Image (cartoon, rainbow over all chains, first blue to last red; front, top):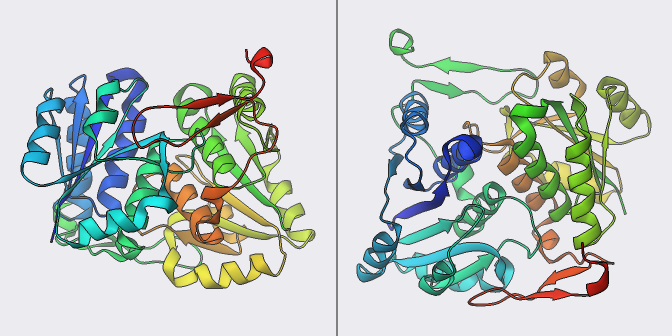
Length: 185
Length: 185
């Protein structure tokens, strides 16, 4: 099974804290394997993501790197494909079939999600610059929709092993199963 | 054509500014007709959304209300359906067909998106409590995925009339058409 890595560029501790947290949680919930965050180092944010993984299960990894360019080049060297999400790219419906084919052929996928200012180089380093509509909106929504289309919606039914908490879906109200009550913090 | 309204509950000016902005932009880009924001009044935020509409086109409306309960009840009285997005609800793939049927039958759809603490009453007032996976992630992603599934992806090709700016999709780089240069601010 090929791997999906999200690369979040240019994180700023104060301004981007919630957006980057949302990106990480979306990456996990929508079936990516890991997120690598670049920009300002933010250990509190990494810790909060790890706590979510501990409680809600799965093997999602979050880490920091200050070497995004090398990471991208390494990814390509090892045969992975690089997708950059940007409103200036080719609209998702026009390109998704080609990307799905690559993914099903077993190539790893790196998804680059920019911050406010993305270096022009990123557009050149990417194999595909993909827009989720060519309208301004949100990198969180863009990541969710890309992952959803790539996996054809199957990610929404993903099971997360070793969870301590599990929601039991309800028509009205909330129900959460505590799978090992003693270990909840 | 039936109407899609997003109701954002419990906005807080400082803490939620970016998330609510993202919600509004996603609502617009993914084909909703309007967003109504409740909680703390935030005229700067409304103004920034209106500027996006002015530049990028379409007829999307953003407004503030402090009467969310009456709004929901009014919506129902006029025959509209009410969807509340929550990780505790029924998972999207299990319920989307039923909701699509309602929408295609011409009923208006209100989508409620909560903040940190959603009053328990909202779960009761909604016709459907819908989860986008039962995992914790992001209200921005949840809104995007719900709108995308409701409209079967057609929203990503939506045209926005009277735009001053228009992206011309590129495989590499950026290209923006200025449709009436003199009016750009």
